[in-house]
Length: 164
Image (cartoon, rainbow, N blue to C red; front, side):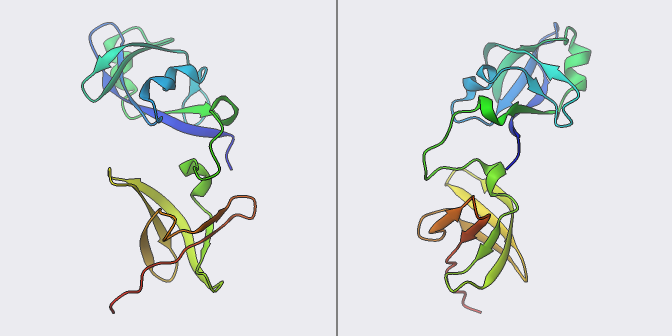
């Protein structure tokens, strides 16, 4: 588990006075401003976030230290990270994506399938990308993934039979 979680990204400038368009990765988009100062991925730059208004494709925000459109535009694509301890704890059946990436995946018989490489959400539920001998895309449901054991660093997955 990491000590920081990616909670959003800067999608570009908004307006002429240094406002940015934020894309929030939090369950409630406005919560991004509640997690304290956010940092860049390398941790070298910190921003206090003040939301200004909803905008097309995200939220308008002011970031400390950003006062011009040029400064805001230069941050396009920058991911924003919050300390893990600033985020709410989750119920037993919910997980932060960052905690799942890299976990070993086994079938119900204990045979290794690979590791979680990525998690995708295209609107119909999360999909795990598991890389091993072959790449598997598996829906992150109780039926397909009956066990997630973060303490042991492993997942038990029951992929559907292929028609090969």
